[in-house]
Image (tube, rainbow, N blue to C red):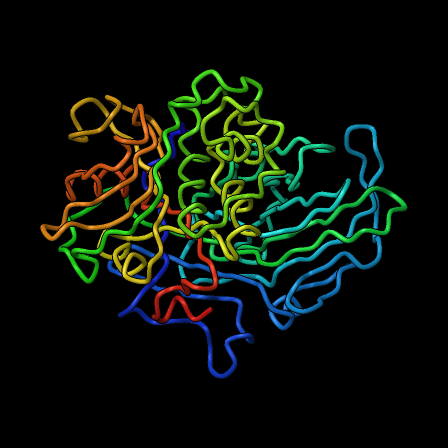
Length: 418
């Protein structure tokens, strides 16, 4: 399960037909991937993942090397769990998308060797007044030294954090700050490959159902895993079953690319457990503050080093999702529904559920891998397009995990010039 998101907040990865804000010349000059307004829907997706883009921000004890932002020299110390850490930082430029932002969701790809971790923060600005920095999460690729956790609340100055999402009534600009920390006196170097920040302001209503587009008839061969096959597994990481829809969906997409973790990574799982890589994914995405595996950027942070690139965004319709399917990219999406709202679903209702969009039938209905099915055999299902699109857009604003490898670049368009 996933926490129930607030209605009325959404964002989109802008595809063909909308204007880009990447600027002229070398796309490495710009951090903004796309910004556009479509009627009453306003979105912005920014990313930093090249030396030039990192250098547009403020480096404090960090350096760039072959597209990565790396820990260089300490600029301070922090104490966590009774242990001292040296820290270095990077702060993004102010992002001004051209509308009042109501929500920002950062996502990242990082490497945190040994006893090191990162912390991601967001703040806003209005007419020169700046809010305080709000912590989105403290994250590490291993749980040996640090328990990954978010910090919900922090509602001291008109902004607040809901698990992985920074919210405000509306501010015209925001910044992202990343702290890289390593055990005091150590020489290893935590680093970032990419960080993205999705901002948005859109209404709660889904609007008319989109017409089938270029993905009609495209069905990707995404492997099928059932979250229910793990019921009762590892209570310290959510207990499997209905709690593991997100890591199960993420694992299905990784398996599609042939990028599941190496067996040595999950050799701690007993031999009798089916699909042990799902147990591993649940452990590696577990948010100890939220007490669940449905943290959106924790899932993409887990997937990114395995597949190549992964980030959190929002789309405006199933038709927009079809452009990814045509490019061979399945999507993990977040929905919620009540009794009778999703025909053919394996569960009667959910206040937050993730599944994989794998294709579109000739009639426009949507092929999914729904991990809530009781067995692998029943994971592949077809849902009514109008029902699924409304439940997706109105529950999470069209939120999606985009996970890609080198063989499947993002579809061409003004927002996907990576």
